[in-house]
Image (cartoon, rainbow, N blue to C red; front, side, top):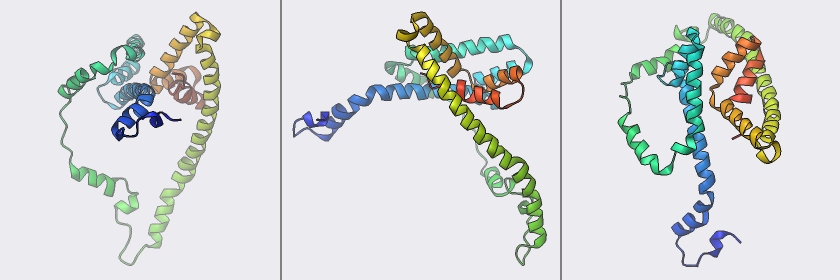
Length: 244
């Protein structure tokens, strides 16, 4: 018997929905919202690597300039911010955060529609289409030869090898992820690993899932050299750690 079947016959639909369905999923929904908020914080840090004035911008600047002590301090600050979400991300504080967010919104810049149209109608097209390579009688043989000459190196030297490398990287990283997740979930269980090891494992997982993958990729690239291994470690094992 479901919960909704225990209500009186004259119970309205809103009450059935609130007390019969919403009340039972409120806890997992709240946990998922907090998880997505954590992902948003991490994404905002990653956006700093493309010039947005977020924490990632200062991280990228510190790494480029070789100020690794400053980068470490910023990473500690970011990890502390994510690790204390359950303390300051409270439902009763959301109205305060909402007011602060609206007040601190930046000025929205004007968007030139002609630039957008030029990009989608001219700039992203192949060179032979940008110059109008189709004559008045239809598609010419010279135009087809030019198209094939432009497409062949892209297809055989970039697209196909890139697709193969992406598939290989995804499959290898997925298998490594499940292996690491199995070991890490065991070590994070305090009843199995003990109180001290359990807390240490949870702290390591917090670091792994908080640090942007670009940072891990940069560090592993310096340690291991250019290969697929730094990308697998950074993108799957650490940045997308499944242990929460």
